[in-house]
Image (cartoon, rainbow, N blue to C red):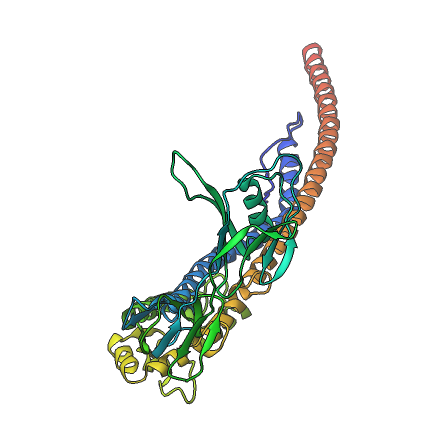
Length: 447
């Protein structure tokens, strides 16, 4: 809130000194309002600082967005996998995947155990029967609403759907339907799903379940699994489709083009952040000049652009094509990145790391968190401080203005009383002067 005092003439009098009285009021109010003018100047300065920080917010948010693109460029979505025999298995890549050659021999893709009602399902009248389901030899009671095939299937799916799925199938014709209850295990292995009525089995086992079995990278170690979707490495997931006569080769590669585009965007965003910070110090002398916030932001940007990792064989950000010049700006050279990626792809990946596991991405993420973190970051903390100061100034201005207005009202009343008194005296003076003048005139006439 910004309030300014007015000195416009609101006093009117009848004496010859009324203008002087008004001048006294205006001058007194103006002097009393000087602190308010100073507070308004401070409020304007805080508003300018808020505008400056809004600009910084935008540039650092853009820098965070560019960093996220680098994270995605080294994540699972940036990798491609080729499979020598896609009829035997398929591959899905996720975060943490790394370039390399893998092999999987599918010994057995496994089978899901299933059973089918031995006879046509006939719903018995009356209360629901004491059905129970057997899963891997362990019996569990089934609480069905009625004795229909659909009612029992619904109860099984509701209570044990994570282990067995039940469906009602017609094994007859449309003219002569034959409804049966089919049970299928949700996991591979010899689950032998069975439905019992008072201890008597209602099912015939159809498919004996088997576990999936596979061998990774010729280890000689046969791994068993209750699911066909298996993880053979961090971020490398394989779906076993069919048994193979030998190892199926998998080649995982990362796209250099995606990373190149991300690093180029990062350089642009970084330079924009540097320029925005530079507006606040040096000859620019911005609204935030002299504040520790500016030096803190400059230091953080410097830490990001000079990051290095010993032993990576990459040679710092310069090895990725991000060169730092004398002005503190980054320039990106895609040919440098291509050369590093061709000769030391694993080193490039290790240098970049991840947002939580270390490397450049960890350092940059932590650094930007110290800038943008809600409640604790440099910018949110500074903005909260400005908001608090601004609110305090608004309150102080309102209180000061109220005091000035009260003083002005008192002065107007006092000056009005004085003016009225002087006006009365002036009238008396004029009256007496008139009498004297008349008397003198009369004396001259009759002298």
